[in-house]
Length: 234
Image (tube, rainbow, N blue to C red; front, side, top):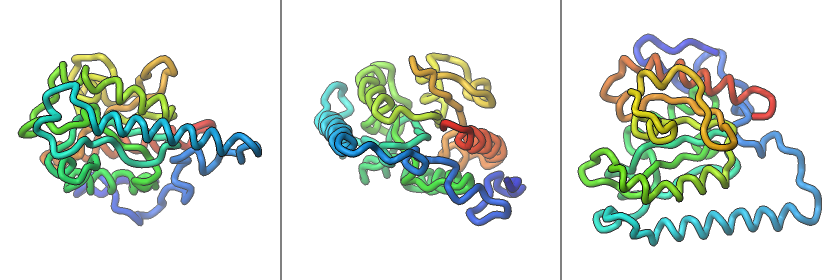
């Protein structure tokens, strides 16, 4: 894989020696065997019905006071069969307005980061710990995270990803139940939940926009994700 340019730390799409065109097995549907006749369709319909019901529940949630100040809930976006699940912290102003996580400048940078390892936004699943925007983009409070955690856990259960990428300090500390700083959590693989899902920690794109010098470290994290996705069974 090509090294990252000195000026950004993250290669542009189309850099030399790109990842394989299959996107590094970003979704299991790219490599899965056909489902047996007479049952796969019903199972898929049931799976999508669960997603629809969960989204409706999130849209109507009043479990914490944030529902009073949000424009809309920000549920998540991407493939329901993704091998890679990205978990951020909370919606910002653009996300609250559009109802989709990681949009605006930070979202565009995340898209570039994914393209750098051969993935499209539609091939992964992207969500946040909080589904409602905290006022003034402040950090989520413990009681707000507690009110939302059941929704995130259900999303993780439904997708059953091979790899999770915790984006930002709040996400990393919550998912790993740790108070260690992000700099000490990134750089190695962790495990999440009873399935012992492989989890890696990296910087939030909004932070990288403020601190471009850290893009080199983020690129190292992305290369680890790419390598893990290409392992058999991912």
